[in-house]
Length: 321
Image 1: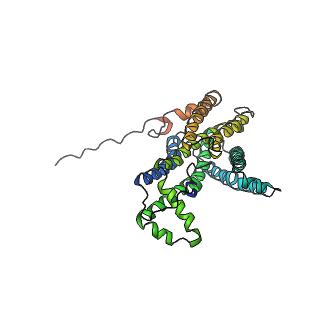
Image 2 (image 1 turned 60 degrees about the vertical axis):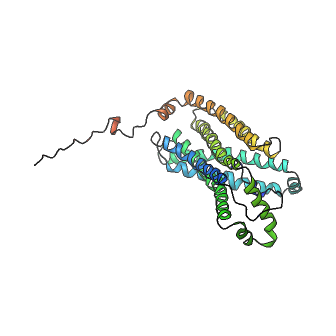
């Protein structure tokens, strides 16, 4: 769910491969742009809010842990338990459609669980230390969650692409082939051929997908915070679960070969994010008015205590001899 184009290297094409092939410069540029988008979205948002909220390091840490436990450990553990069920392994291995539905359903469900329980534990931790959880903590939790996802999945995959491209263009395809075991050379060549000949713009998909997921998770964090803080009703969690279910559908349709292109998925994400952001902003305006207005107000980084402008030191003019 974290990436759009990761997995292109495993596809098979024509086996007639030239050792003189090079990775197009445009492909490398698109990979770099994707990396910038992956990292730039959360960093840019943090720079925007850092002077408007109280920075709480625990919120970021809990976000990272939330991703590692819910979206990694629990997903793998649950999928492993499913495979242990009689006949389940055969059904999933022989039916990619069912496998895709199961994996994405588990991933989406545990993302919601990770956000809700992670933020609830964060609130209890802050309460014990005499601090109040606020909207800023929710944003920082989401930043930590997204940072963990980007570092462990999306950006690591893009960096692998970049390293392979650099090796092919630098030392040549033959040097890479010689470093691979004989039994794996055919599949390796097929993967490299797919990597080189795939449309360069496909490698922008990871960056766009990461940005859309980050925006979506910010909205999830706001709604979970509203429920946990008591500002909105507990029934709002039904909206959270429903939004998560809707968000995974476009990518699932690609895996089921209903959508012919991942670009259609990204277009769907634009619409889903736009509607979800609009809805969450309305919720903030209605139920978190003070925190919403504080988020929009001009930061007072250039002001002194109490919001008063800092006094400039008088200019000292030295007398001429």
